[in-house]
Length: 416
Image 1 (cartoon, rainbow, N blue to C red):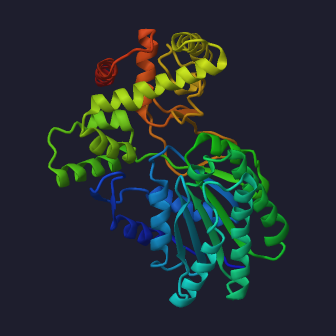
Image 2 (cartoon, rainbow, N blue to C red):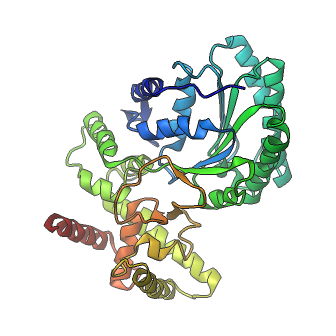
Image 3 (cartoon, rainbow, N blue to C red):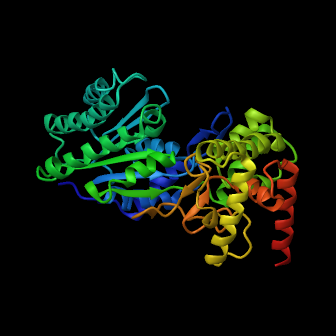
């Protein structure tokens, strides 16, 4: 059985290779250097790859999960210590499998090509019309095919890492229960087939959707299941990205502190502001933050009997005041641990659970008002939108209202 034999110098070499790569800011043609993720890379190698079984890597949409996993698979084969690993990464879109990435160090390219063809066959009929049962069977049978390949090509000494990246984008179009069924089936195989046969397999589901994460959490510890949280870029790294964007585009008067307080290091939303709104932050705030929160409240109000957005907000304010008092949070201003993802905020990926059972944090979470002990807002703009609604006592707030509150908060920090 292969053992984990990767030292700190090899991890540093891998990180250096990651930082040498330029990647596009999502949704744009602007290329910037891959930044930060030293801690996440080390944790991924030492912890996630340290044990066989099932794992989930989850976090805010646009936090960079796909980019990190793709580069890790691509660059690991260039670094010593990874000779015992076989990396197989499937990337899904909303319609179908969009990419297969395969890395087997020191194996003939012709053989790698043959294996890649075999690993693609199972997905040829996985289309948007695939049934719940069909999705479950295909995802499970991919793992079965991999085991057959291991034995056929005499790779039993390898650690096989299978990554289903953005799987929630695809499964969400059908039924989240399909993801749970597939994970259950894979866990059964690991427990009853792979471990007794001394085969080392790690299956990683990379997800952004809260519903998908909660489905996977129902596994408990079955198959060694562990969730890992990857967060948006930290402030220093996000500044590096913004500075490089500014340098390459020539855009003037970019307020980094404002971008940090709205995006919290989320590069995907930075790309949306650039291409979708031509740097018009107020228009982005209205559409992406205020309107999305209001629409989430409206849908929940219709389905739960509140009757209106304003009544739902009034209920949240009362509930939040009690929770903030009980949790020792002071005056209620929309703190994530007092809001707790109610009124559809969790289901609609405005908030996220950062402390599910058994979670390991790949990233260090920043100390900011939009991040709590148990819950957080996926980007801070949502926090400021809800805070403005709470302070005004109404849902019809404006981008100017949010910016005034942010400015006031900034002045308070400076005085402290």
